[in-house]
Structures are given as structure tokens and as C-alpha cells.
Length: 323
Ligand code: XMP
Image (cartoon, rainbow, N blue to C red; front, side):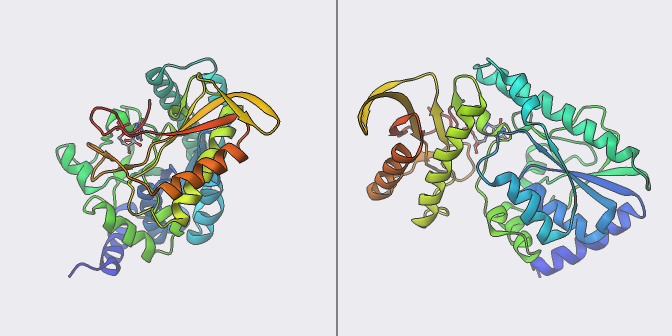
């Protein structure tokens, strides 16, 4: 019968058999799937695995630390963190078109990842022949069930791989659904914040700033987002909503009155949605008192924000993200 214990045991044995005495690498995105896949492979082959985490500077507050500290503490995994914030900011400077942003972030991500990969391959030790991927069962079905090659929807291609991939893939989650992956992660002792994490786009906060991306705007959005997440969690709403993008309208200003006088600041948009699979979504009817608390806190605590608005558009016609 299906138990997380059985799944883990089976996968650990299979991975050991597959990898032998060679080495493997795994890209961590901060998301559930790559974290659980990495933890499983780490359990199987220990220091023969090296994980790579590219810090593109577009993560939410505390997320990089979660990977660097909590995930490493929970798994003992060997982790190479690449601080690439400056590089990403430079590449994104002055760019406000959403697809252009995605392209730049994807391209830079692959370059940085490949560089890190080359460094790991050059290190002393057995040949690096394997690449770990957090492919889930729905991804397998969607892509026709092929094995052995990287198969990532271009839409979700941050962390994606070049076409001329020369690794064999290890995909320990290929038979699992998302809720099963979370159970396996929990059984492996991963932090709750990682195991229960809601979907978050690969390009991160880069596509939640309407306008061009700067460090200052990212910091501001990070603060607003952290407040919204804190209050939604405190209200016990995390399982009820699919995700709640928080968006900074950096190119919009409106008049407000704060403290001693008139302000001319930016609006923050809350985009809470309920969904089964992100293909369609409905806007979440959040309790007014929760919305009030978030609004009050954001306008009080986040500099340059003088207005909070709620997006009440379903998908379709609106996408979940604003970009
Ligand atoms: P949309 O905005 O298309 O989003 O309704 C559907 C789901 O996909 C996520 N999303 C992305 N994930 N890279 C990703 O890895 C992306 O470029 C990207 N764009 C959107 C979004 O958060 C939602 O869960």
C-alpha cells in the first residue's frame, strides 16, 4: 500500500542503483518540488549530490535564507549559492515589458546556473553524470510521458535547461501528485515553510512590478508582500487560497494624505485567488477585516505606498499574475 515511507525507501534504493559512485547536481528554486527531489536524492547518495541555488535577488523576504539555512540544516545537503543579484538587476535595468523581463531572467538564470555547474564539474571527484529534476506526475502526463530528457514548459522555464543537455535525469517525483510530494517532504523533515509553500513564479518579484525593476522597488514590494503573507497566515487562510500575488504599480502614482500632509505614492495590488490548477481561477472573497488589517499595515509600514487595492477579476479574463 502507498505510504510515504515506502515511496522514500523505494526511491532511495533506485537512486543509489542509478547513480552508483558518480555525482549528481540539482538546481534549487525555493519551491516544493526541487526541494523534495533534492532531499530524496541527498538521502540516497549524500555528498555525491551538490545543489545549486541562484539568488537572482527577485525572491520574497526570507526565502533565500530559508534555502540557505533551514533547508541545509534539515537535509545536510551540499549547497552552492550564487549571489547574482547585481547581475540580474543590471540585465533588467530599464526594462518594463513583461515578456522581455521573462526572457532576460530566464537567459541570465541559465548562464549563471551553467557557470556554477561547470565549477562543480571541475571540482575533484567522480564524474558528474546526473541532473535531478522535480518533475511531477501531472508534468509527465502533460508532456506526453517521455523520459530521459529535460522537458519543461517554456512558461516555467526559469531553472530550465539548455537543449544540448548531456546529463541523465533523476526524477524521483515522477509518479507523485503535489499533495503526495508535500507528504514526502514532511516525512523527510523539511521545514513547513518550504513544504507548504504556495506557487511562486520562477521570475519572482521581477514580474510583480509593473514598470522597470530596481532594487528600491524590489525592497518595497518585499516589505508589502511580507505583510500580506503574515496576515493571511495569521488568519489561517493559507490553505484556502491558491496564492496571493502582491503587485507594485511602480508606474502609477496617486494622491494620498499621510501623517503631516499630502503624498504622491504608489498603489499595491492584492491578488488573492482560489484555483485547482492555475488554469482557471476565481478571486478569493477574503474577510473584510483581514483586508483592512493588510491595508492599514502596508500603508503605515511601507514607504511610498499610500493605497492598497484588491483585484476582483477571475481567470479568465485576467491571468493570476499581472505580467
Ligand atoms: P498566470 O499568470 O498565467 O499564472 O495565470 C498561472 C500560474 O503560473 C505561475 N506563473 C509562472 N511560473 N514562471 C513560473 O515558473 C513564470 O514565468 C510564470 N508566470 C506565471 C503563476 O504564479 C500561477 O501560479
